Amino acid sequence: MLLEEGLAVIEGGGEAVLGRDDLADCLRRGPSVDEPLFRAASAVLSRTVGPWVFVRGIVEMTNACRKNCYYCGLRSDHSALPRYSMPFEEIAAAIESGWAAGLRSFLLQSGELLGEPHIALVEKVLRWADESWGDSVRMVLSTGELPRAALERLKAAGGGRYLLRIETSDPVLYAKLHPRDGLHRFEERIQCLRNLRKGGWQAGSGVLIGVPWQTEESLAGDLLFLRDFGIDMCGMGPWIEHSGTPLYASRHEAPSRERRVSLTLRMIALLRILMPDINMSATTALQTLTPTGLERGLAAGANVFMPNLTPTRYRLDYNLYEGKTVVPDRIEDVLDRMSARCAAMGRTVVPGEVGDPLHFTKAPPVYSPPGEEGVGDHDDQVH
Image (cartoon, rainbow, N blue to C red; front, side):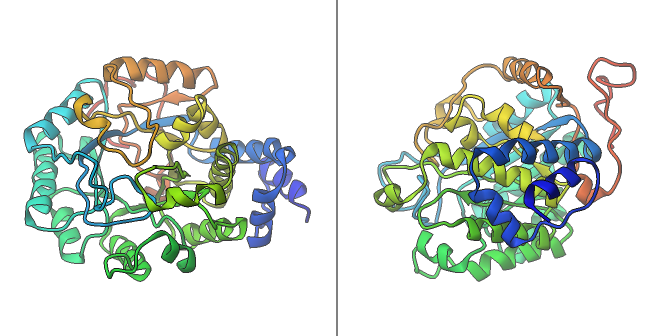
């Protein structure tokens, strides 16, 4: 079956198998494939998880990192970056500001760290959130590779969701993006994902799109890896250069920024087709490369956006890449703007919902637009 025919079948509610060659072909095609691809992904989204857009409030608790990845501005050898670590009181205040604005899902993000002080702080935040709000809030962790004992400890403290991006499923490309120093082992990252799955976490992952030396075949393999692993959540975005990283010297071997945006949108759409019931975010990196990144990401199949709750004085120093969008506005104003932008494209922001991925819960969504009877004042309801 031709690719276009398969996409038309999917759009109409039928089944069509997209194999590795089909995925790579779709990623390689010119602009003419975008319309049928996004229509198919949008139809799948509508039939499964619906028009809802979930909100995750991000708190970037520290930019300290023990890893030295070649693409990341937080890498340990980036000596020009001022390092910070938010104390518990500031983390709690940031989360409380999101709660007051109506958010019920929060992402704790940091560089990759081990050691008792870091694990104990994350554990303290989780226990505090659980004691404060119980099951009416979901805490998502994105703090890198952790040993199984640490994951079990954080799960017992109230953790339920964990996002660990593999960045690439290709071991050869992984080796080009990381130093060979014993701290960056592809096998260990995959094992951490397995431990998350075995430990009962809602497990998320994702890849970096448009890095030097990456091929469409490699990206197709990433999609199949995410599908076959059975992730519940996905956050994948375009690579953005950072002059303080070794990969910056190879930036001319990467696709153009416009091409990276295009690849990211197609990856979102294809993964939505392959995994209809997962949660996927329109990432900050995508919104950094294009002003309409939110709308384009949602139109391609994403159903999550993540406003930043980190205190403004820290945000520029959480310097994953250069050009990061920093919006110092009140979270209430950000939600109002984003809700209006989503409504203009027929999507409904539901910040008061915890938004468990259907892939994990297998329970159908029952949300309604805020303000309608039975909705909007049900902060303690869990779906």
